[in-house]
Image (cartoon, rainbow, N blue to C red; front, side, top):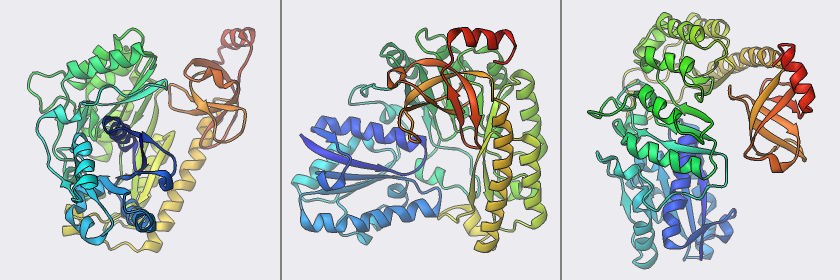
Length: 453
């Protein structure tokens, strides 16, 4: 057996793509290794949403040049968004790179690796496809050792947000057939998966470009009926597609977890216009109000970009204000990073200094830490159901899991609970996670009787 080392940058969608990469490479007798020094194939699955992630790719490739010099038989490849964005430039800039695989071409990897290994070629595949078959698991279903699984339901994006490179590296929106998605989830549930995360660059626009397909709320309703499944999550959503029907699903679908990631990006209408987001601050807030009326316990997370071109102190203050008003449970915050091919680069440049960006990012993160800590402290004394994911990274003997509202809970407990739904009593809180205890059954009953859970 040959060994492959896969290094992944970016979001959960990239993590899932890496699982698919390993899946198709098994057809060529590759097994995973945790060390590039032991690998016959080194593959970087990349993200180009921000400049920092892109630079990490070139840094990693530079480190692996020495490995290639010591062993010419090693094959080094790059896939994902940087591969799609840079294409032939990668091969020119990195002489020891053997192959470049674009975002739609994972299914071609075995053939490309063969070309690089036996023919000495440097293959590059960057084609976009309009047939969703490329998203299917052509090598058979992945091995399941966990209780949570990612399921891609669509790829691409038809929005043209001025800062975003996704349409250029992932293509236009394309949805998988609902029958294929439901069949995959049924099989995963039958093999012990309790929670699925539905993935797409604009996941709640699922089916819009596919005539006769289910809408996203209709797809959720079908998945909710799969007997052995316990939980449903999805990401990433666009506020424009948070429809009344999707909001209603949070009140009617018992397996849909009470969590929504809804990127606002900025709290300023003028910045939102320059970003070409397609909604106003008030329209966004009204959708949040409707959602909380239907699902009062819903936890919200969001994305924030600071230092977008032209952002004034007054516009930045509006972002701080929306953080206070919505009181998100969690945010992902970033400094604006100019990306090639985007409208923002062509029209606006990058006129906010790095110093100002860093100051604003620090202020956003300080405020959100205060909000997250305050909200998490409300859980102390309550009983929460968690899906145990495995050992905690924080402390030996701890297990870690997530609540339905996506709170991370670390508790002392046996690793044998991995994959199970378990109730814990919350004993402590930080801004980023909760500390749990495994209470006796009698204690849980008492806490519930007192209305604490």
